[in-house]
Image (tube, rainbow, N blue to C red; front, side, top):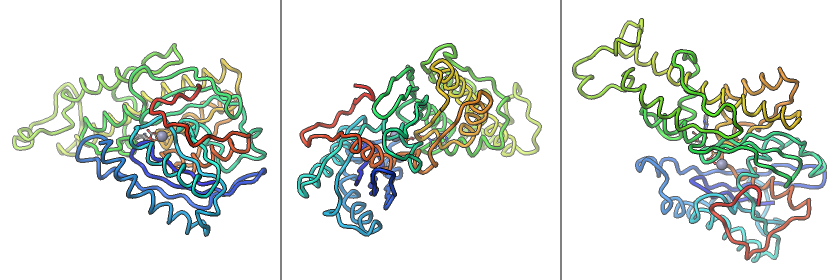
Length: 363
Ligand code: KG4
Ligand code: ZN
């Protein structure tokens, strides 16, 4: 099974060998376009699709030689068919369809969210569908935050979603406010490691609901920033102004004090997000009487989130599973894996099936 992922700004190709008892990853290649979009402060769809066109053929070559195979020997071609940027999705899907038609093989369009949702089972599943144990799945990425009750392959019920920003989007927007680059999550996590998560009391919104909201948290950070003065302005730099008196900082130098506050800010912000994600996920597992919690998507790379979700699950006697970090951010192995499970379960797509930028997990 060859999978292509081009839903956003990552071009990825992976090849899996699968039979009825399991699967083996033969190749996985990812080309990131972060640098190409950074100077515009966001993803430019036109640049993303042009880069997918440049990178995809190279990655196909690299993947085939890493897997010691030829594209003509692949049995089925899969691509992300949504959700994502239309002009980006079109590139991967068109390539996969072209290869399937050219070599007379099968084509599978895969929902990006299903790729994330199944990724915690990558490498552990046996006997196809039966191995996807019922679970409460938290998908947390730059574009999505949702809680899904998974009863088996293709049997999904979305029980909660964000009403405004996705968790990763909140990480990215706050990172931008404090002058970090994109993606902001890893940088915030790095600073948070030595910070005090109790220093700033940020809101934990909609705790009584299964839905999420992170825009209030983002606004709270925005209002706090001028008070704590962690981002020195040009004027302050030349004047050497001291930090705001409201905030007591026992530090020797101005730069050291700023780093200190910044670390506490990152830790407090990160903890607010983690509290919300952990509380709602565990509550859902209890409500739906499921004894497995899985997390996936870029934000699930966050080590502190993984640790706290694992601990909270353990305290309630619930099993916890997450994919290895390289499988959490966008990649094609998760797409090939979802396609493999679907193919085994008898699904396949017609090449006339269109991409859908707003494709829902449950149709
Ligand atoms: O799944 P993904 O690669 O792309 C989407 O489908 O959106 O997720 C990317 C998101 C970004 O918002 C990024 O900041 C976030 O995942 N992320 C993290 C971490 N690593 C990536 N957020 C928090 N902590 C991390 N370590
Ligand atoms: Zn994703």
